[in-house]
Image (cartoon, rainbow, N blue to C red; front, side, top):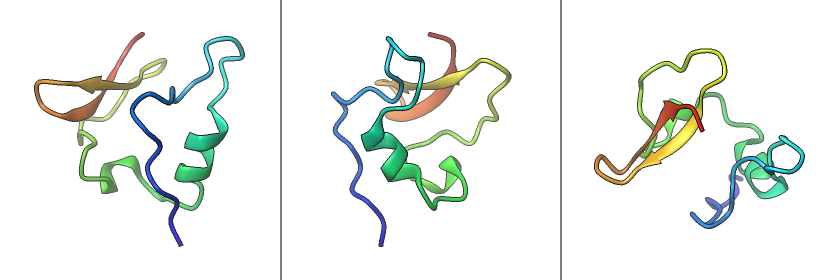
Length: 65
């Protein structure tokens, strides 16, 4: 059973700890690839990149924050 997608107001990474937030951890648990999600870009990230929301394409794309 997959978990519901956390709201867009829930950060993926806690800026104070640098760790993934619990809501996103639970959502991703058991998933094989982010690219299987319909709102993720298929562009491969490089070291240090994180998913960033692109409001133009309506996709999470690799980028630096």
